[in-house]
Image (cartoon, rainbow, N blue to C red):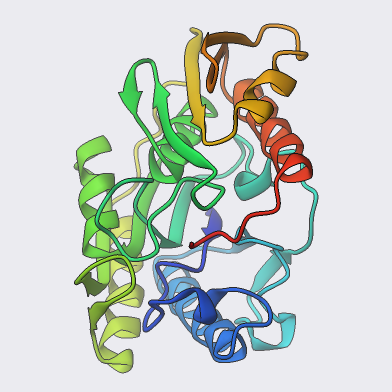
Length: 276
């Protein structure tokens, strides 16, 4: 059984603040350790369920957060950037299931460190008219490849967001949001045990492959900066709804790959801290 793991950081056990998840933050090194522990718990759960090939993609920020020596030795690691598929680099239809570890709620939600891909630079996103963030877009892209997302870990708001997309996904809340920068934390040992057991249970019930999507979908993004939207109009197929909202239509995962280009263009035009 081949398992793919996309690992973000904001939804990791114990982390609540930008200083926990940004390089240079006073608690970032501790955050990296906590991230590795959550991922390793998921890997242990996958092994218990019979996985014989596990690929982990470091999907947070600089994408160099996970230290290879701190990760469970059974997992292979994709590290660094840029990546054509960003948070889903390495995911193909050859995998039997995907896990989202340490994920967070979309922009505007009351979850811990909530945002959509770029701090407050992205104000909102819609997939076929439905509000979407990193969770929904990852789920839709994996489904388009025929790979089921079977488990997600994060705060309770992120878990609820995933359940709204797909109630069959096993969710493991490792903290309970008291605002964007505060949470009630599950004890570390308890949280890691829950991750391990949740992943093992999700994979143990023989994940059903979704039918690979053949139709087109439309992704719309409202940016804080009108200059980002204007610049992205230079990409063929991108149109404007207004001065800050653009959209494009295409098939996933190609549309996801194009969106990753949008993010790189936006990063080159802005210089904003993610969690202002």
